Length: 497
Ligand code: CS2
Image (tube, rainbow, N blue to C red):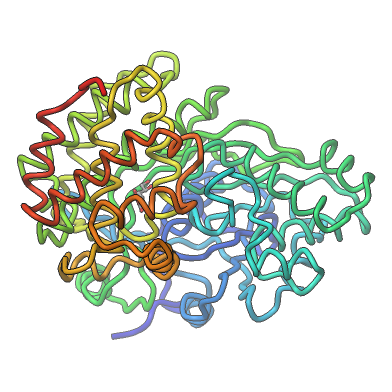
């Protein structure tokens, strides 16, 4: 079957308009999420209002997507999977491609070029190199250390800081850095991390003053469930659209992007795109999404992983999982959130359950359960601390932590199964090392070594009762199974400690 390219561009399937040759956006992190989210919104914005908003797509390491998109003249498709059918759309907004690991200088140069007005980022939570205990830039991380020392940067924060440094020296033209990751106050955080990087690197005050004056870091909340591409995705695209695409992106229909309108040098007319809201309450929307959607997603994935459920819908439809998730939502997450004006939490939660029940999308339990060590930091500490302060045990937050530990660093003698084994966890070795260093023999000691091992914020693990509860629930998982641990967490909901 013929491969997708400009020669056979199926215009009837195009979403929005094509970008011009002129690039105005540098995007770092070319994997699934950006291509189903901000890239689509940009195509729709360009249809409503043409502008110089072609995208330079920067992959962090992976050549696969860059090579395929170049072969396809920048085109790729989105396979939208809904309970009422499938459809294919073609996106045409990427005009140049780079791989940061091969040529970091080219990325720095692109950030410095005055024609580029926005840098967007989707590098996932672990791309920010934060210290889990304090939330600051982790200056002990070897990659951060190297970047700060002046080597060609390998971290995203290093690339951005060096790009801004060059821009300041050359043109001083204003620019916007827009993080689109699941990080709370993502813009504010990126701003802080860039400044911490530059301070550690001994940057002059003039540079930081220029950043304060000419660079903006809007917060934004991004939402669309986008599973990984498989052969089945490629086959479905061939069947529906009649072309071969090496790198299609499967996605749900729902899409939402709430953005703070704080752009230093203009932006595409994103307000015309589906699901985009410009708001002054972005941080509230971020918290809503990070806790209600992402936090619950983690719980669904770890309970489901331990229960042998391969997909999110297969897990979420188990009554014991649903009960835990409802308790987590209504007892622990929702009361911790200052809701945006006019926001209807019941309608949002009802819609979440529908989205998690999308069997056609088939989002994998192992995908959502991956990178838990960085994701959970955005999800469970604050709601837990809020209840702990009131003397109430956040049972479902403790269950989330216990199930995560049992999946990715199982206590001796416990085999969590193939789904948990497939979860990618960058801290697997560090977790294991913490357990070994503590000489842990029992499940309790194993869990306590992790809880006290610097993987969670100090503000949370200072509550030893919480650590103990995580250990008790993990012990039940190991001895009696995940369903018993879930039942215990539900039985003791909102109990005082
Ligand atoms: C998921 C997210 O990976 C995860 O933990 O919760 O990728 C989720 O699918 C997206 O944030 C949806 O917008």
